[in-house]
Image 1 (cartoon, rainbow, N blue to C red):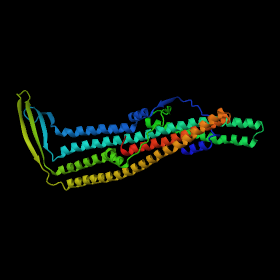
Image 2 (tube, rainbow, N blue to C red):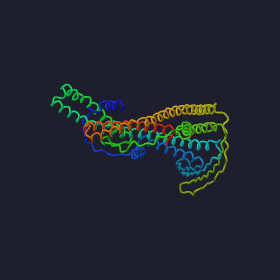
Image 3 (tube, rainbow, N blue to C red):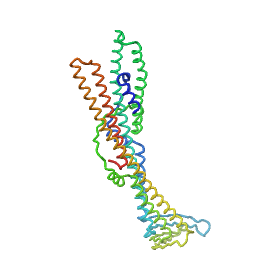
Image 4 (tube, one colour):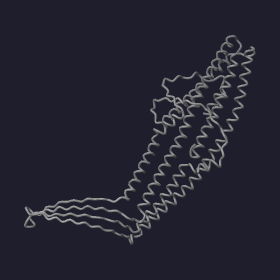
Amino acid sequence: MRRYTRISILLVFFFFQGAIVSGAQETSLTLEEALNISLRDNRDILLKYEDIRKAKATIAEADASLFPTVSFTGGWTDTRDFYSKDIGVTSNQLTVKQYLYQGGKTVNTIAQKKDALKVSEALLDAQKLELIQDVTRGFYTLLLAQEYRGLNTQIVDNARAHITMRQARYRSGQVSSSDLLAVQKSLGAVEEAYAASENQVEAGQALLRKLLYLEDEVSIYAQGDFVVSARDIAYDEAFLKAMRSRPEIRQYEAQAQADTKAIEIAKADTRPSIYASWDYYTKSHFGAGASKNWNDYNVLGITFSWPIFDGWATKAKVEQAMVDLRETQLLRQQEVKNIALELKNAYLNLKNAIASIKAVESEVEMYRDTLVVMQVQFKSGIVSLLEVEDAALGYQVSLFKQKEALYDYIVAKASFDRATGGI
């Protein structure tokens, strides 16, 4: 973007063709509309929502261990030619079983699943922050490309006016043919720069279409302005906010809690378990043509079970769970370092962008004063209308450079917001 901007400024009075009118119908979008569409339709976001639904379902599955289980078994057999009479047997069994204690496995499993839900929610928030940053950058990149193309249109009109003037002066013998050819030859560079600006608009539209999951035939027009309120940023406060708000921090904290629960779940395999049960049995005998014989009874009991030795399998499971916890803790420490570096870079870029905005304001003021002076001189007959148009174009170029500085600030601010965990 900046390379082509410099080209347009260097050739400001001689370059650029007329804008090509696109036949595609454009759809206007504001930044807020683009963000709403992306958060609603982006597939990465939708996948994260599905992960949350799955995590909630696993919590419900774990909660099922708190309730008793009820099972029913029924059967019928018919014995022929073995006894003096054929005998049919019908049997039924109803069992109710309720665990009273499982070494803490049930409680810790439920807590672990809830921590896993927090991890999924943090991953969703992280995906949202990344998407918001990408959409914001893509939107203002397209907006700046549109402004760049608009500036080219003004440069084209000015360049054509200069060529017309050169041709008239050539016919009157005031300039040589080489001077006229030099101006006409510059149109080749003009066409290249203009094609580059058109490509930038198309590339910006393609990026936004991808982020918003729009069809390829949709042509987007970014509707907005580069209006920002630059303010000083306190780095220490921003770092503390990042440590509180960054989804990655919440993700690893929740994962560490889940890993802690996993250790207790693994230890539960060596602890006793207690459950209460009630069984109801019925059994009937039928002889061919004989009277039936019913038998029914029920059994109520409490079972205590304590595994004595499992070949150190539980010990190995505990060690694996402890390794997972240590890995999570190391990843969290690494993530804190990464966030600190990301925040520092974003902070410095934002400070530089604020300084650039203040620096370019003086240049805009200078070109504005020059335009006012030229307008006054034109009314007095001192300068020509074309010279006034040159001054106006110079002022428009300075305004575009100001918009570039504001664009840099907006992109830097989006990165800074992302680094601190959101606005």
